[in-house]
Amino acid sequence: MRDFISVQDLSVAEIKYLLETADRFRTHDYEISKQLFAANLFFEPSTRTKMSFIVAERKLGLEPLELHAEMSSIKKGETLYDTARTFEAIGANVLVIRHEADDWMKELNEKLSIPVINAGAGTKDHPTQSLLDAYTIYQEFECFKDLNITIAGDVKHSRVARSNAEMLSKLGANVYFTGAPELMDESLGYPILTLDQAVEQSDVLMLLRIQHERHHGFIHAAIEYLEKYGLTVERERKMQNHAIILHPGPVNRGVEIDSSLVECKRSRIFNQMENGVYVRMAVLTKQLLNWGIIHDDQIKKCDTIERKQPIRAM
Image: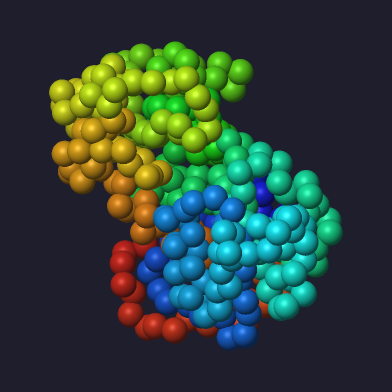
């Protein structure tokens, strides 16, 4: 795999390798014994993805290079390609890119001599998010086969919905969508449930926010949306005892989910955020290894005490 761009490019074996690697990083400290630079080129706002990549890079011993798009030469008309080539020229060893275009990677295809990692592409792909979601689910259930997982909310404009549906179905889960009819995308080919059906039958309920920045004309008052299409306290009580709640963030409290449920017993929302660091450490090291920028003997275990119990082998 040349670059880390889409879930479609990943085999089941590669997904499991990355999840197992993330689990090793969760339980032990590792560091790369070579000076390397990771450039974080974020052309869209981000908190969780950007910050977890930076933490992942620092934990591995990489030096993060940050692009502040609003203060950069992009404002002078510089292209994505020229920005990427600039960071490559000054010594970046890997590029982490988020961009509002669905196919921004085509501008860079086969033109760089360092790996590129997709940190979000328009409404199309968010592969590291789907990996961390899969890892969080595996921590809970230790399997994917025949799990019922429903993705609820703005499916039509969500790269998270697309990447997760692809990855989780590859791993053997039964994937469903639910939400306001005008926010569904039947062309994706997954069954669509009512929210009440989803609440009662799902092992995992993954909530999405309404992405107002990507579309126009969908207007609901917060309380109206919550009552019709969101996870209320009343609906949460009807979930199966073992079922969990996920959300990629940012969370709009009182819109797609009642505020009191964000940190309730069955919520794994903040676990997802923590797991994002370990998954992104796994992706960074895998790409650096794939390109021969580092070798296995340059990834050094730094601690001798197991911090957390690893999950069983996948």
